[in-house]
Image 1 (cartoon, protein in one colour):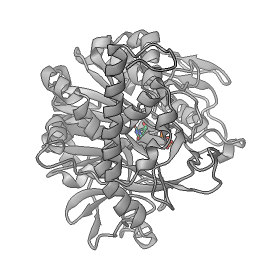
Image 2 (cartoon, helix red, strand yellow):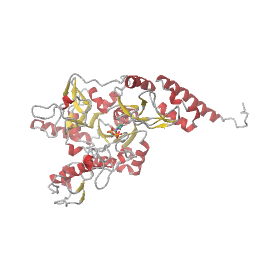
Image 3 (cartoon, rainbow, N blue to C red):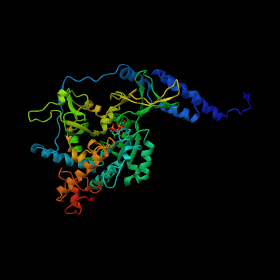
Image 4 (cartoon, helix red, strand yellow):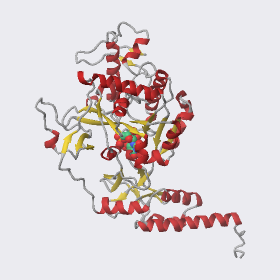
Length: 500
Ligand code: UTP
């Protein structure tokens, strides 16, 4: 049939494209109906091809039957967290072993090194978070973190891997989880930095899945535009699924990787692959293990390592009753003192087991009430709420711990390994918490300690704080002993900058 307005009839190719789009729309409508979310297609007839395709791709990336049941459990019914009846503090391996543990630590370190030398260990960085609190308008890993060279967070991790590879004469393949929101920028950053000399073949970037934000009152998924859902990453727990769906675990299997060293992107001091930790975990045949720091005070905002019905678990600081948080042992130490810093070693086959299709992926979702800007379908206005209006759903990586047959916790020294960058600097330095400023101070403190342990005099102020600015690049040293390989000054000048 020729259209009456004299326009050309659509070509076969256009017709095919149109019918594919029509099929995709009706398929999307069916999926959305499963969760009572047909409003998501409200504007579909008014969209041009590109916008329609964008919207359809977002809809198709989501499991709507899962969303339907999550809305029921977490939005309509607020599935609450129940305090277990039986909670005990988890045991841990201390930083400094008692005499009876010294042999075990020596063996563990040797085993960890052997696993590294044999190419059995992969580094895994989760970098899919939104970095909202830091307010950095680019992937968090591209943030300049170090005090003198301003090396980025990714640069610090890459430097560590470079040094570890040189020391152990091995390749440590590096897997990095991004999100659809920062994947392209992260890839461009690695490309621009020549993959930090590690070889693009040994670095695999892959995005995690996204979840839609849901209106807390109407239980409807929010739109941010006529062709876009309000989406955010599905939490660091999504890593355990994305490792599988992205093909990363298959790639690891092909390389012979047995252990995955999991760290976050925002800690420039992290030991990306720690032979002692990996070795203790392997020696004890653990499936997923964790590092802890001793909490600075009872209610410090760190998850607590606990045994719940004899299974390892992390209880969030906000969920641990104050009465338990304040308990002390006969020695006056906090009873629940092991704080989680999100460093794990995970056995490759444990990740595969979690993704076994016959069992289904078992990590639970957690509800977070957040302010989310959205498009009001009735008026077409963008609404910027003053109060939390939406439910976001996230999985947490530590929820895999209770699923382990065996799991250990190792203590690490805060100053040696924990300088997180979470928040933007406050106007008053005294108010900064886990910010670029506090992180730089901790990096300087660690560098000073390492120099002092090598006999270098470092001037400190009356309050004990290091006076000069010192940066030790990971390519120079990832352990204090590495400093013995280089020529060191006898002392560092006050008010100077020292870069090693
Ligand atoms: P956080 O939750 O501490 O911070 O993530 P964030 O998401 O980067 O920033 P905020 O909360 O919006 O301010 C801890 C680590 O987990 C990763 C982050 O990239 C960071 O390395 N993460 C978090 C993911 O990879 N995916 C997520 O969905 C959430």
